[in-house]
Length: 247
Ligand code: NAD
Image (cartoon, rainbow, N blue to C red; front, side, top):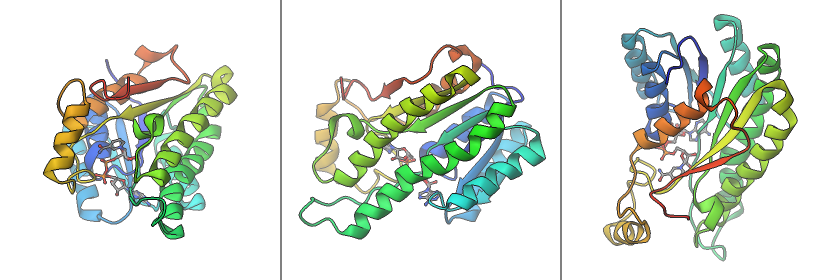
């Protein structure tokens, strides 16, 4: 598998799954641009690490909810590198609460960050990818978008929305050789999940047929396959990477 010479943009690439995707792409020869919301230092470290591998790398501070910023980021990548071949919509947050206690702000923050962001970046990427006569868009959902989860109505709605969005986008652009697919991770060890207590973790492990959490590299490997030409006839799919959790 190789991504040599492909220009790739990963939202939320400063840590966790996004960072792992960015570095795995770089290791496979891709130039990587990442966006981040706050931590410039962490983003610069990813850039440095990728440059050490010998590829081009850039970091943009851009709130994923900002429609115009998404367009600016993509225009800049295309202007500087000549094309955009791969877009990974990874940025995401949780604001968990039972629905009776969930605030309007918790609902809006999650829908805007996890779902509106996908609209922002996928829309901005479409024209450059059409000019490029192809591209691959990979959207990071969650098993929660398939199975639901108490305390995560906002998150589950955003992640299920990503699946419907991606299948529609895949249909709109299939004839243009732009593929769009979803990766739905199960429970993955990152800072997002780092706050869960021992008993919740034990429960998650017991509900996972493989009996363990996944790591970011296991998500990145699947995303890299969907970004590569090895998956050239795959579009509109949802690939669960979840140790069997949602089967
Ligand atoms: P994380 O919290 O470690 O990283 C999230 C990334 O998104 C960070 O780089 C952060 O800067 C970025 N981000 C958040 N809000 C943003 C905004 N408004 N604008 C720009 N960037 C923003 O989380 P993670 O575990 O690496 O999750 C990455 C993706 O995978 C998310 O979409 C998440 O929902 C999904 N996911 C994670 C798990 C898991 O178990 N960790 C499971 C299923 C799905």
